[in-house]
Image (cartoon, rainbow, N blue to C red):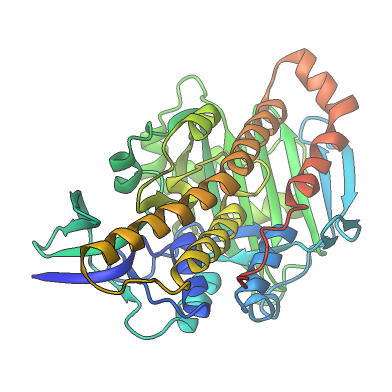
Length: 413
């Protein structure tokens, strides 16, 4: 069975749905293909910084998300070796693009809000893409069920293992050598934590706790390879995963330890941290003709500055705007081969502009995140000394520096 679509988006994650909604706001229809049978809400939560809020406001859902989450007023960084406060940064200061704003947003809430704003039928579930081929000015996308679709624009928002980025010829993301364990915990009577992002570094790990609301806490722990630790076994055995986390906490107050102890085994996950080598972003084909990638399909990064999800939202706004600028301009020929060629050239021009806007931003975020993670998790004595005595404040400020960015509005001139 063959279907034709003007704009086809692969992947109903954050960037896929943001792009689809951005296009919808501009009056352009797109179809999202999702391999699973429903929205995938794994990942629990994400820190949402100023740059993401500006993007969410641009597509009209910022206030809806704000109303369901607690504002975070500052960051406190502690040494898990000494238990001492190493740095404190308020989130109430003003940056170039306005007053900083930080929340820990539940992924489920964000995805469901995006989905509700879309026209019915915008997402086609149980639609796994297995191959892509050229068909003149179209791309033919073959699905696992034997059906296929022809698209005038193909956007890969299909994550780290993106089939679209593979078609473009981008090198696979590399293993950072580190992994992350993430979880959420509910306290029905209230968790009692203030509106602060608490982060602990030392003993070769980095972990943190953030409130999503008055009863929900999100936490994470990232770590480098440890001799004798089987990552596969840890992933398969939540009880061992929890024991491992508790063993790495170091010198912390009892109420912090209780966050991890009270987490249910089915509310944790473990995954390796991958990144695309930043120079591959500069030299690789992140678009080609009428095909491009966004989100983790473009710039997978380590989570050390909390910008993976935020930058994906940025991508969606920029991509929708760049396509809108070229596709909402009236064509001089509406039919025939010349019309299709003109449409293809306009799309290519729009995607070229998108790639130009996102290439250096992606490079900067990947590089900064990797550097911050390396310093914060290093157990080398010299690095540890510099981190605890000199660098903690500088590293903490990088969260705000990377977030002080505006991807622009959806409106087109």
